[in-house]
Image (tube, rainbow, N blue to C red; front, side):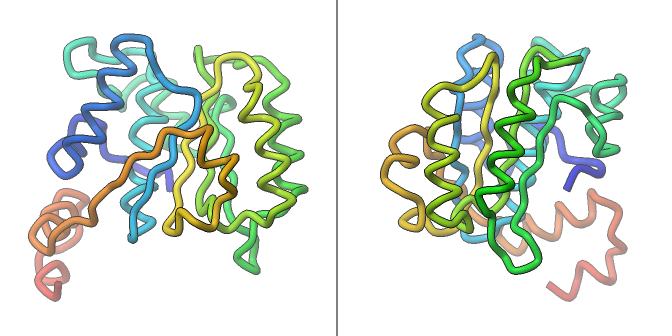
Length: 198
């Protein structure tokens, strides 16, 4: 998920509304503590979450662009998947997020951020949490420890408990058009002949 993420500025072309929300929140120091990124294509939400997270880890964020430099130690650690202030929660091999993962998350969040100002939780497939995991997460969302930003993504809004939904700011994303998808793949270094099969 982390390798060579697109910048928040670059994603502004494909998700202008969402990118603007995050860029102004970061610039104005008004970041909400929890966001729910909704999209039928989970990869779209993951890419935006990664761009936001990298921006928050960046040590040289451009004030004008509000985007990660992708060169500093914070950006490199993020891209390498080893930044200490990022917590990644994903569904297990059975496609579920269980209470054990959320308890482990709570334990990690009790520690202070060590390199960045904000700890970031990337919760992939939040709609895959079982009810016990959602209830455990609710306690953390109600009283987030220190400066923490939760970036949840999901496909099915109704699979989340109403109490979770009421504590996150929902952002609806749109899947890229075939032309946009092709442009993204070309920009990522995928050979044109493979992109033309879209």
